[in-house]
Image 1: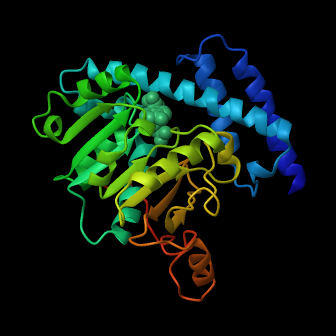
Image 2 (image 1 turned 60 degrees about the vertical axis):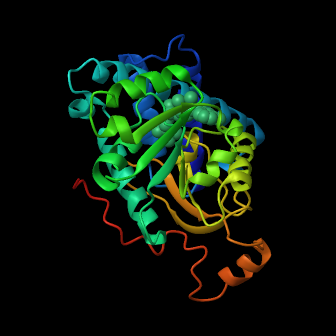
Length: 309
Ligand SMILES: C[S@@+](CC[C@H](N)C(=O)[O-])C[C@H]1O[C@@H](n2cnc3c(N)ncnc32)[C@H](O)[C@@H]1O
């Protein structure tokens, strides 16, 4: 097992070296080929905790995550422009090569959300929606047909591209709103959302991620749900890992799910407590049999993540 881990770390470092030498991360055969190799490697089943690797490897991983984020942004820009140039953009979302991954991920996220929500939200915030807000579009179209989705992104161009995709649709153009702001500058208005989604690439390293989560913990309404994307095992080479026991101190963790198929992100559902929250008490309670605090996926392991919408 240790050999397999060393092999994966070695191969990831080799790919990082090749990617970091590319002058341009816009979609091309060479870029797509290297990232496909990387994704294949990182979805190999393996019990690897990237946070436990040497300082040097962790620095390489931090750089790799930034490069992956940059390439993902460029890929989304490319497909958002292509899809946005069609007459009815929403009918052409499947042109995006990872459409099916997003479809499965949004189904998983919605299923996890409804396990913990007594009623569907009439207003939801998605932080880090990007130029191709597929999750928001899928939620608004298939799962939350009456919900108003407030998308936040710090990049005005990403929001302009995203709005262009829904602007011709009479329903979504009214229910999908776009706000240009760094989430760290959004405070009072966060109290208005019963549910907040946080994209994986908002907070690219441990320090930035904790800062964003702490900010949300301070400003979200008591009782509101935070749904975050994280990464587990070798998938932590691609996206930042949220440490459930350290990074979410202001929240109660309700469930965690680590996909083992082509979906890359883990999903964490947490709730801002209603009153004064004691992590010590919660951690004691979590050791009690039958207490539904740290489910670690157990409750939702039965979920069928099928392509049905
Ligand atoms: C490219 S999208 C990718 C979405 C991806 N599927 C995910 O789950 O992360 C990430 C977006 O987050 C935005 N973003 C990053 N940090 C942010 C912040 N602090 N506040 C608002 N938006 C942010 C970026 O501008 C980018 O458009």
